[in-house]
Length: 387
Image 1: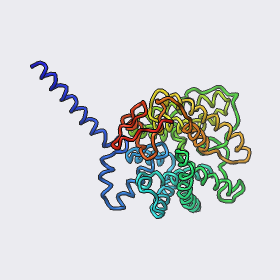
Image 2: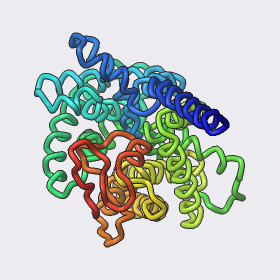
Image 3: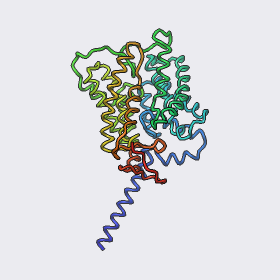
Image 4: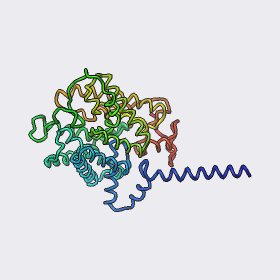
């Protein structure tokens, strides 16, 4: 009888756990119940869902709830900048639909987020952070370009099994800044000063004492800079969005921000740049992408992610030294370079496993489906690629 009671308690505990897991599916990961519901709904509903998901895609969050939190965070940063980002997102989503891009990428916002970033960063780079209607034209135009670049670069880099990351946005935005030039009467680069966001040129002062409270604040600020935002409250909201969708992404994002900041200090970078999070965001993106998103999370992939975060910060320093004298931004090119190179790393260890591009969801799901050892627990029994 005691055995039966113990068995009953075990069964009840498993049932309770299953219910809890089922409940969390409504707001964590990719929110699969919503995905199934939206799949049968009309185009406007799918469009709205894709746009909400697109807000989170720059930091690897395919989650509409996290996306809505990030949208609120963008308005906390700057309403005009947020509206430019939304314009870029909507235009890019419509362009992707008109081009009949693969439905999976369109419905997840995986294409439109390039336009979102283009719309957010162009105002930050030009310093036009107040209402300026003329800026809407290049935002919309280069958001369209980002979709074409996304398709082209995705096909090119896909031959090596790596994604395009946010490289299309980087190329489109860099071309705009380079083409408009420093003497353009309407779209000149932002003036020096730490207040204008992502790629600001600040005084080269390293002789002042380190303000460790400011260094601590760079952890969330570095996350916000992934969107070209430098307010502490904005970064905190974005960190919350990461935590809701995937604790693994959140953990590696925080670690990446810390490592990027410390690398900047070690390389005697200007303190104002460090405090503004400019040395953090490339490491945030690189560490989060390598540590569980594109690699299955194991102790080995976690270690690789830490090194990749430091490497991204070093690349940022090198590119800044080359591009800054010419008045050009490095944007997130360091992330694309570092993450791309580290995803191409090969190993005979079965603990370093890259997730197939067509099976990417979120890190916790990768850990559950793809067991360390190289065998994937998937319906078709396909083995996971060991890099």
